[in-house]
Image (cartoon, rainbow, N blue to C red; front, side, top):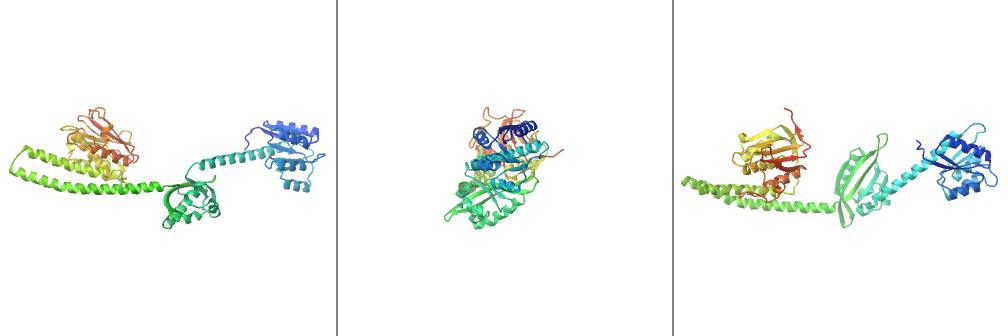
Length: 477
């Protein structure tokens, strides 16, 4: 496929008439060809030194120095420029010497007939081949420069992992193993993988060779006393026929990330254990207090007992919320498909919100951690009953665009200008509130990868919208 970009050709022939005729015919044959004429090898060399020339077309039989001498002189300085020998003779010895000297093409000149089409095609093909190769080499240099700017190991192997096609220098810094050794034995990197992880890595390699992209974490022995955690992401590559041709990917050092994760898990376990212990120690005296209040009611009727009972109930809620908040930073458990209406009704039962004050609009299924999402719904419903006022009605429904759901009430609404701060831990406008309920909701929504915003309902109450739920499947009525 030609591009018709300008091509400058040097044509050398000691016959002025033939030089003019061939040059004219070539320029008429292809508009993008420009012919520089020279009647001797010396004139041709002079033009080469002063002008940009993309291709050389030369006669063989010339006085003083012939075309083969010209070829050898050119190749001593430039082994790439296309050189076409256009000669009247079909002498095999000349052809053999020309090939040995590095001729690009060898064309026998016909006595009768116009060969300009053949010559133009040959010239264009050889020049565009050189240009394409140079462009590819330049692109490769750019890609290599990019590869060397990152600490990640960039690599390309053949589809069966038997040939290393590319590896950035970061490989040596990550695996403690030279690229030369890897090139000689493309699977030698496996020797650096910790033995307990090696079989898993090999299975992953087979899966990629079968056409499956994947991500895997494993350990590498950088040296006798240094062990690293790395993550490899790879994908199969296919040729123009759709056949698997290579596997490409990158490997990065995640040792620091793993250490941080391990530290975080330990801290979360310690925090949860501490919270559970404290909650246990608090619940015992609360249970005693609650039981004694009930006993006291049997002996007398006093408003102070009601106040004390309310305080005990608030303390129980506060303990539950503190335990939930202790899970902050944990990832959600395994997701499963659950019914939206079922989750809402379950949360309402725990808040003691009866059907006369709860309206569920729409039916759908979604993929989530059921226990944690139920906890979030409970907190939103409890927030409505606690802050909405006596007799508040709550509506839970699906958003019109199918992106999520909402929980709204017809109560007093959100405090002015506090749509964002209400999700902060410890923030509350109630004398008896803990300020943790909505913070827990925000944490659970974020752990699912969703978003929550607080706004005003159509009746002036509070409205919470949870969006970004890709797995939400609305059921038709």
